[in-house]
Image (cartoon, rainbow over all chains, first blue to last red; front, side):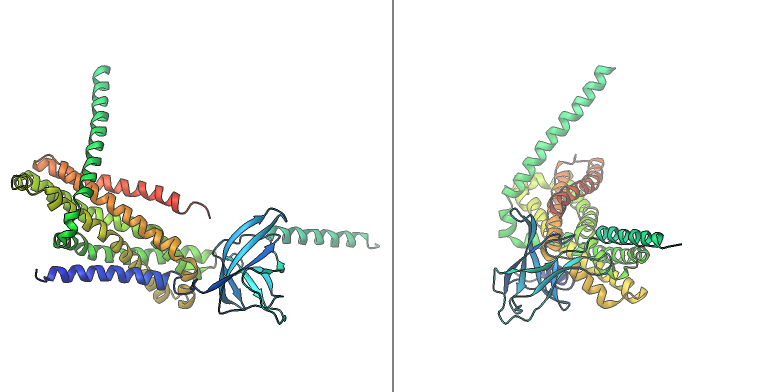
Length: 160
Length: 261
């Protein structure tokens, strides 16, 4: 069996196709940005997670340190239980604070970790005790309207 | 009059069901005889050249232009909401999930599928297929199966190339011509596109489309009446049927893959 020019062209075609797939995986997709092989899991309870989704990013000081693995409702506490996968390179103190934040005004929601000052570190399977729920826009607006109404009442009561 | 119409309708339905069964048997026979196309792989290589390599130009050019249009239109729309930086994820997600697999498959159906139908139809019309059977060569193994596997192999590769060229086209229009920030273009893209959820699912889609398009093209060619008119009709049917099948399968697959999150 001889090698032909046909083989060369087909070879170029296959290599180009696989190359395009590699470009898609590394440059377009998130395969290069985060490697799940070396990681550990943490848990946290939130009273409201807003629009947080599985695979949402977990950041500390803006650096991506992990992803949300699973979200479920805790049947005993009636709170959202969020399981997080954190990169093994990063250790966090026991009194780390977990917030649900929004990137930009209408952007995606993510979990921000603010490390505390404790000497001991969180181990795999531990729970982050200090959490703050997502800011729900409707709550903010209703609170704002309520305080406006209070203000105007006080204005009315002032002596003429 | 009514009886005649009813009879005509019944004939059409029975014929369609009959043809469906014949097509299923044909598909099973392709799978059954595909061992040869791997043992004598040079047969498949030759078909890979005529269906895959020859479709490269149209796929690359079409992908670039689709990406450029996406970049322009996406920018115009996103600008209203002040989120031009999301252009990267818009372009990449729409290409990788939908436009890459679907448009590449549509182009493949009209570029390579119609050629396959015409070729096999003409082989049948000029009695080359019967001649093979006379020489105890199984035409399913020698002619049909290599073409099938060449189509199935080249479809995901072509779709990946289409998406990659589309992202490049979107980059050229969005970043180089319009001036969206390059860093946010790529970082939003990487944040928005998930490898398993988006890229792998897109590849699965294009694999399914490859199976559907080549099976339809080969069946129509094999089933074509051995006349000039028959072959031309079969070629037309290949393009129409495979385009409709692609769009229908795309809906089904999308419903399974991306149902709510």
